[in-house]
Image 1: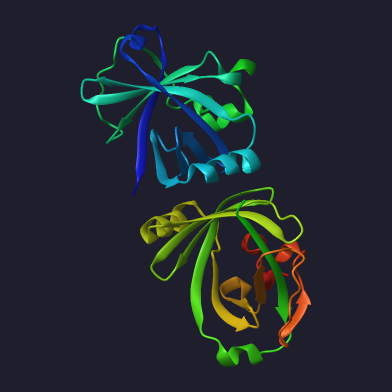
Image 2 (image 1 turned 90 degrees about the vertical axis):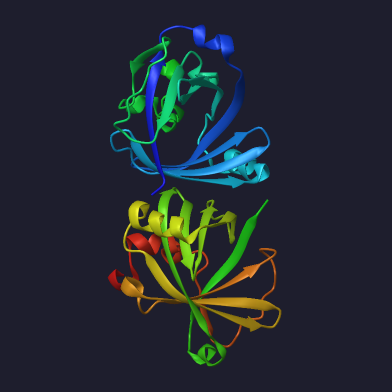
Length: 154
Length: 154
């Protein structure tokens, strides 16, 4: 069963930027039902269609497919709720794990979230020094929530 | 822009069965928002993920992707609302067009719908003798509606 197991944190300082280079992500939500989400994302010249199930502890069922970027653009423009989520994603290796740091733009400017993907919900993690409060269980930090309630309005 | 343009009809008699052989379809809906639907379908050993936009006249934006049948089974079992739609689809060539006749099963048993896909909403159609009332604009015949309101409850 394709599971996404991840933990999310806020950042307490900026030293992670020293070794980071980022990539722009643009994404929107075609539909959400309860906590099931259907997301379309563009990264560079590639489109992605992703279905995620409800979150249980730190785990969600996840299915992701590559799609033509033209399809992704058209779905964003015609089917997705505004505003889109735009963010710069930085990937930083720390110990054995890859941390993904999302710096949001637009109406979510000012929000920065670090995520780490795990193979087991009980897995022990060595936290980098720039990691702050854990927000894994706070639904406000779901990207699908940020579409409806942007960070600038919190 | 990938458009699905189709017209739907009820059937007035059964002579179409003479030359028809059918295939079983099983499908469910991961999410619907207004008239935008996210459908997962299994036909034989192939899975399909299909996004359709709102219907305007006889046209809908449609994106369809092949996916592994194992993914489709898991999405049906874990993310889709019950009951699933099961139906036998028959394809019949009539003149220059292919007619698709869906004979529904389960809670929708007794419902048979013929659909024809067009290249232009204004296209003239030669109607086969077994075609009855047109229901293109009746939302009750949307498969996504039948999940929530099966034909046996009409």
